[in-house]
Length: 228
Image (cartoon, rainbow, N blue to C red; front, side, top):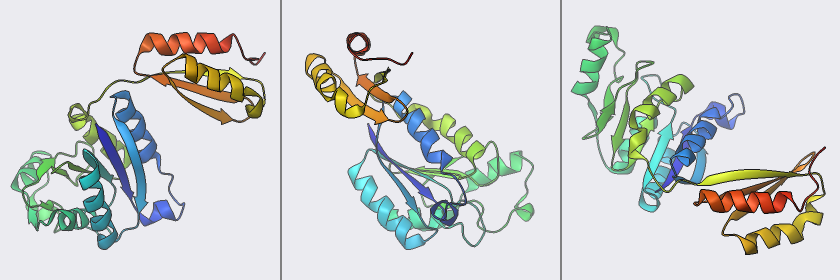
């Protein structure tokens, strides 16, 4: 299964808010064996949201969108997703019923709180008010991290793939000096390899076979200078 993650918010693009939602979602999806192939951040603009969601839903098995839910003037994500799917926004009776169970009457709610794309499945917000939505492989989640996490956990069984196993080897050598051994471990074992320089070089080994990645990591550790 391959997925695109779309985060929405002017504050993300301005650097006022760290995009922790994208990192968390990528980690959780990877744990489930899902390949995240795009992470895109968009402004609070209906046209941009509609264009990107429409493009990505044609390319990937699912699109996960976070941020911009609610009834305020800059909460435009549902409208953008509805436009991408060619749907109208409609008040969702199921979402209203959930909110009523949580103690919110219609009179309490700002207009538009429970408006979702026509035909969407409402996703209950256990940690907040604004509901999410799922339709045609597009999942719309809140931007508030605790709300997003709780909502994703309610649907995560819908995301699956082949688990990937990962081990890391730390080398206290320049990255350029390691190129021959990186090439050798790639040739010798069926693993993907990434190297990430810093104070030391972290060499990441990944495979869908747990034994293979363990053997590759052991082989490489014997051939690099590790930190003392």
